[in-house]
Length: 119
Image (tube, rainbow, N blue to C red; front, top):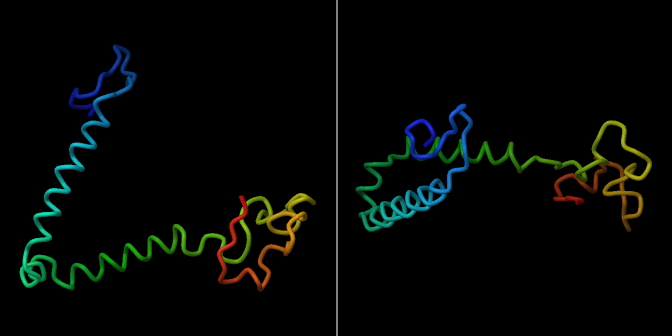
């Protein structure tokens, strides 16, 4: 938007605030939602021709792989935060901290497979 002049740029080349950008984003989303609504009325056989399993399968697989890396295995072996550092301070020697009712060291067997976030 800055390159094509839609958003203002200062004389020295600094990008200035662009109040029109949010409206453009909302308008684009509204237009794309109409396309999705129109596609929902197409018969399934036509959709399978347009989006065959050889296309949809790898797409869903890659989305799943990305989600696993981003959130699926994040802190899967124990609490989050300062207790998961290499050399935690004494207060964070156990997760989430030593004042917790059932504080355990990071990586304890009870944590594996559970979702423990301490914020």
